[in-house]
Length: 447
Image (cartoon, rainbow, N blue to C red; front, side):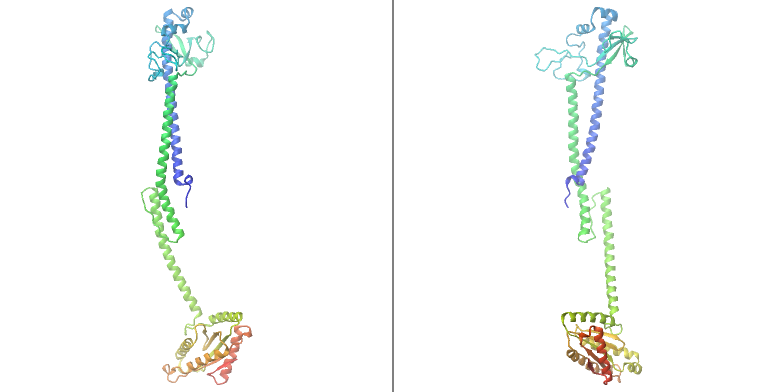
């Protein structure tokens, strides 16, 4: 039986491994990317704060105080004048301390794509800051107007800026990081690396799932084939190879043990069944056999002769029945003993069996009485056979049993199937038997 790969054990195992790999890769990759972004933002924020702090310290230091500095020069102009067109006083290797990327100048400036050589793009700082005084009033930047007070929640995130050893102002980071082209390219490269790693992990998982699924499925198919063989051809004893000591190996060993035990039980059951059938046949034979003469008994004769009569009536065949009785049998028992009488019965039964056809139904009907059904025989044909039987009994060497022993049989015959049943034909033959007794015995009389 072929199984669709999608629903096979190999397919399911591959799907489970792929799902587990995807889940693990997404979890690890997502966590790594999130941690990278956190570290990237923290580094960028710290670098931006350092630069902003340096500019504020220089700004206030140059003019003596914030108020004097603000009256003399705008802070942004001061920074541009101090740092130059690149916007960086002390060039750092890229934003956030990362390695410099292609297109970034030594001074930290970035040349625009397609711009002529020497053209410099002034970068915005990665973070903007709001400057407040120690009482929480806005001095620079932020959404609020200058000299307005900020909330307590913003003041908790403020970082102090010292000028000449004294904390004069506080800086509060505002907004999200402003990523440059190089920053975005760096993060894009990291995302691409994570995606490639995810694809590689998925491909490796599929290959491993197919390989291990095939090996695992082969063992299952061995068990399945053995089980189907047990059911198909009746051969209980099936053995499968044990490849390992794991659960599949234990399962194969258990199956082999079960198969051997089932085979032994099946063999014992078959022997018992054969013995029961033999005993049943023996019991059936005993139920239709006379134990003394080994001839069929009255029960068997009644059943078989009734069937013979039905067939004769259906097909228009002739059938004759004979009822015979040993003459003076009681005297034989009385004069010579019952043992001699039993031997006479056995020998008469043997004579009847030897001198009748295999299709004739011969039986001991009871006591010294015997019956025969002759299929497809008229009364004339049956009379000839009965006369031969009578003569064989009379001429038998009874002196071997006892020197003075003489045995004869009287017989009655009937072939009148119009009487309606085999029982009525037997009754008519019995009347012929009594007529033979009255006529001097040792003769055959037809009804």
